[in-house]
View 1 (tube, rainbow, N blue to C red):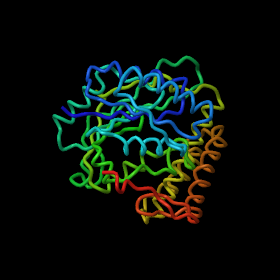
View 2 (cartoon, helix red, strand yellow):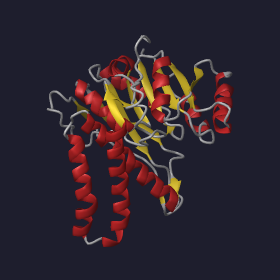
View 3 (cartoon, rainbow, N blue to C red):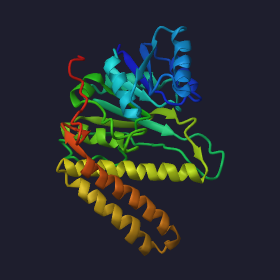
Length: 321
């Protein structure tokens, strides 16, 4: 039976109890859980994460705490992958709740489809409690994406996000770490999963998505105009940063992404006669373009990873096999 390492990049101590408990309640029992804290340990938020994790680890030896001094979802995931002992690594966000059969279903999919190297699942929003709110979610179709045989065109409905995705650890080591300058909590605070998927795609990695591997984004709603705008603008900035990275790599999709965004946010809105939304779209477009040009001006790509031009440093998994 395949051992699965669950990695929870932990930033929010007030919601962390939910995903930890959902892992403990799994019908599949050959797992380990790595709770990865971030930032300065002496900060109250980080120390609360540590205290909660230690409380669980004292009751169950399969649970371990690890720490990343750097902030960001990508940094925490990289730390978890480095320390994982399982053949499969499964990511679960610190505000999600996995169904009891989550790991059992993951193990079954890999056993029945030994050719797949990544499996993305469904992330459902909880019941909405207020009118104005936003919650990241995804409901993919049952689809296999073989980049080489499909000429790099993903099938309809194929999708995954970092809140519920698993992959073979050996593939992660070969692909290299998640980019620590892209993704939640980083300079470009979104699109970390998209960046990683594009890198897997270039390698010809066979990926699969399914709605049968399911988690609930139980504490995922952010309510109020400030939260909604922050979420939207962060996504625009993160996507702009990734588009800039693609351009730095000589990938024409970066420049096309920029052109398409300009056309959609301005010309598309004018043509739809929803002029009242134009100021909002212009702000989003500005965030995208500022990030795009900042990435090109201040960063370079070493290997597959961004690095500040003045530091020329990138992280790798060298020596951890």
